[in-house]
Amino acid sequence: MSVNTSTEAATLLNDVDIEAVGNLIQAVSTDSSKSATTWRARVTWLGAFRSEAKVRSFDPIPSDEPAALGGTDSAPNPVEQVLAALGNCLAVGYAANATARGIEIDELSIDISGNLDLHTFLGLRPGGHAGFDDIAVDVKLQSSATSAELAELHEHVLQTSPVGHTLRSTIPVETTITFA
Image 1: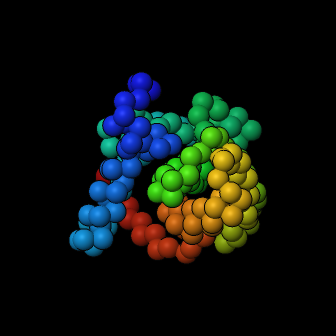
Image 2 (image 1 turned 90 degrees about the vertical axis):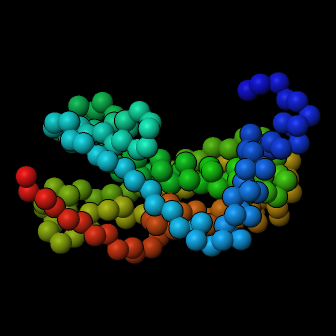
């Protein structure tokens, strides 16, 4: 990071651009149509259990399965990516909301694990549950803020995490197929 100037010090906390976040909040509160966003990814199969997701202009995100599941273990598998997406979303939530509250984060790490039974995925229990049975999240947050401030921050982040909310809720998923 560059050397802080007085302007940078005034507008950055936790490396978050306070002015940019404030402008977004103001824009959405003034015009609620600005809150409706659409996010996209395009996944291309590369052979075997390998695929890659293209998101905006970023380098493709690879996916594969561990060798024990028949893959080549060249990248995280989709369920690991779900766990990572949750952790990344929570990290954004902590950074954004701590910054909005004037709380400086000294250190933040999030360990996530999930239990998944492979019976349905492998076709051994048709109609069963193929997803995670549970997900455990262990947040380690170091800050000079009070325990009460951090507990309030934590609860707010859990209640406002888009990925967390998606995982806790039943949402419609509409899938179509085109035969070429």
